[in-house]
Figure 1 (cartoon, rainbow, N blue to C red):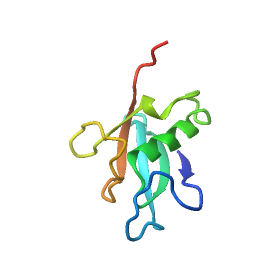
Figure 2: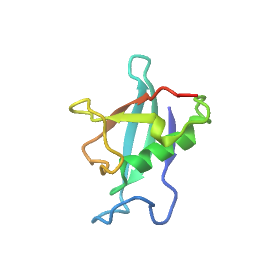
Figure 3: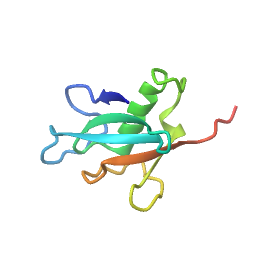
Figure 4: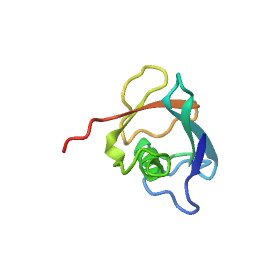
Length: 105
């Protein structure tokens, strides 16, 4: 389990909402069966797009190699549908599943 957090200061891509300085911990599973996950801390109001940027920045460290944010597909924890980059990370999302889009080269 590796943890990453949003840097201090204003959050690019975050929407202004009450309690924005509060951090939310989101567990992002790459494989639930193997319990492979990344724990990410984001401020309230952070978007899914920002969460994808954090995942991309951690990819090299976690052994995935160089990845772009748009290669990550984050899934709604309740319906299993793809989350839009503009969606705000919901406080009820304790964990999410991630898939990778195939790379075209």
